[in-house]
Image (cartoon, rainbow, N blue to C red; front, side):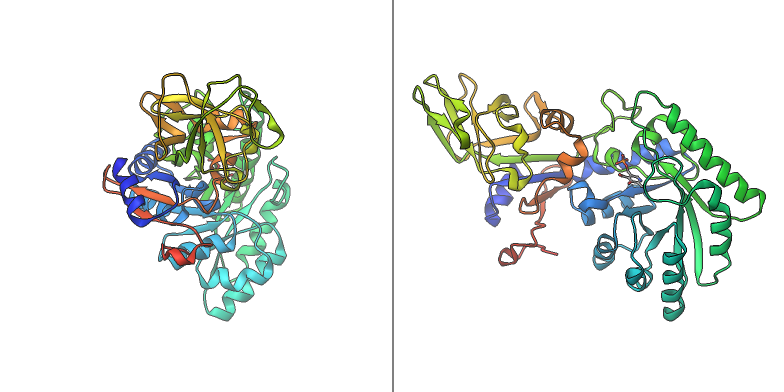
Length: 402
Ligand SMILES: Cc1ncc(COP(=O)(O)O)c(C=O)c1O
């Protein structure tokens, strides 16, 4: 990891960055593929690969055995195609009719639950001389997108009657697969299975059937059908604490470096609103990271970071671009010292779950919230780092902006 810092310094990138361990990611995907058994794995890489960088994650996941990718919207799918990712990609979210042409031309599989989208896709496909791939979304209890189960069979029949459409899949999404009580998740699966069986009975064949997010893949073998859609687990974070049926390795480490160290005098305060007061003698370090980078303001006076393998608590409010921590007694550091915001250092770890709890949120929001101005450093084969900055706003850096 020291090599990563060296490479960063060489490239003159800002001293707050994320390291993405692609070997850990590949190991996680291999575990999930093994767990999925006969079902194919669709790695969910929406929201820029849960903040890790969609393109690098996609390539690594495919190499490790994932067969499909999932994104939330057209732009995310186009980004993968732009970077020559040719694997099947499913757009999970709503596709407005005016985006149908671009989706078909990029050979993206699209989620459909209404005739309007299906018609737009069919027209776009007919115009391009192709077939549009669709996956029918069934709302079995999430209450968001999806056709109701009792309407699904007739809908699929209608779609199958449109020559320009290829009905590739049917799927649903579970609302409570990560809760202690799995009864509602089981009821959702029952509704989905009933729909799938009704299709079979009527000899309406749909090749792929899928329902499992990470939690369902880990906990509900009945949810696997012949395709599974893990997201969070790919990134090495368990969807609920104390779970994993498989060993997962966290992929992301978020680091910064000390900007300034100061010995405080009695009565002095730190930050906006003066919420932290010195008793005198505390050593505080200011770090060049703030809520504009996704270091959440809710961590004010609560969050912890790692310095020299020890925990240091946030002092005062998190600002837009800076945060200040109190160094533990006996830890002496100078400007430039490496600090871990999320991840491990020495024997200590700040997990995505820990940071999420301290900020009163969930690991998903912590990970996807890490800002685009934070460069991502991709590590493979420990110690041979490759850098790909994902900072669209900094074209002058000339680093892999998209
Ligand atoms: C439709 C759908 N499938 C799968 C996933 C992956 O979920 P998880 O990250 O919990 O595995 C998501 C993520 O929110 C999703 O929206």
